[in-house]
Image (cartoon, rainbow, N blue to C red):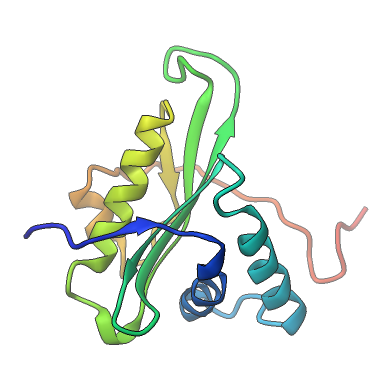
Length: 157
């Protein structure tokens, strides 16, 4: 299947990125403060922060899909000759545009951008719905990943 047209996201896409991001949250922080913070951050950083990468698939109205990721700098090592690695934080497709290749197209564009930036590794957290797509793009499961996050009241001592 040929890849569909995609383009880098810009500041004017912030509202649509928020709409798509909310669509994939599974009970996450959907407060108005969270929405405003996310939208404003995307508006401010897209096109100016070289470590924030985002690709979108345009639709007749709005966006059909998006993929958002960040380039991180770690330490140098055999697997990280540049010290850079990428993390895909969001891949979202509008429900009316699913199963048409938009998710694959934006994810492929983001992966290629990470490679062009010199990332030695790219990671993501796959949902059950997205796992098969990521496997076809070469991603493999890696056991043992754990997360420490603050609770609703912040960090507890």
